[in-house]
Image (cartoon, rainbow, N blue to C red; front, side):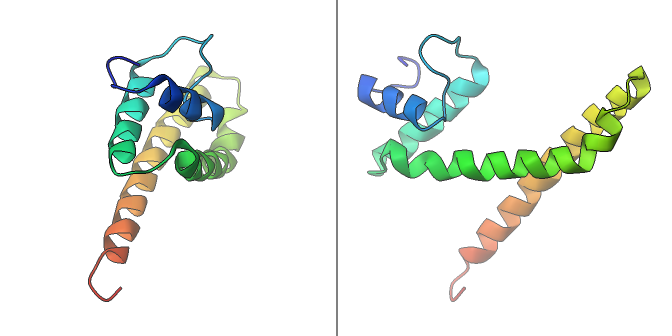
Amino acid sequence: QRRAELSDEQLAGLEEFGLLPSKNEHYDENDLLIAKAAKGFFDHGVEPRHLRMFRQVVDRELGFIDQIVGPVALRRDPEGQREAERSKRDLVALSRRMHDGILRTGLRPGA
């Protein structure tokens, strides 16, 4: 909370809308990344409830990735598990590229 410069109210809002784990859980470096990004949005007048859409989008992406990787992930052998983890990493990277490209296209003048 201090490292991200969030108020108690902002932190509670991020927890309430599922962007950060509840107070009784341990925060990790990913949580700090989320908190710092949220702080930037808050500095632009955005409220925690408006950031809920990010959680919803990510949940849909994770479901999509699980559908693709699911059959391989069900294999019990070590190579199948390694392949599933590689595929997940690849798909996350592709998702980021797709998201970035679509967002940039939407920001073009006249788009």
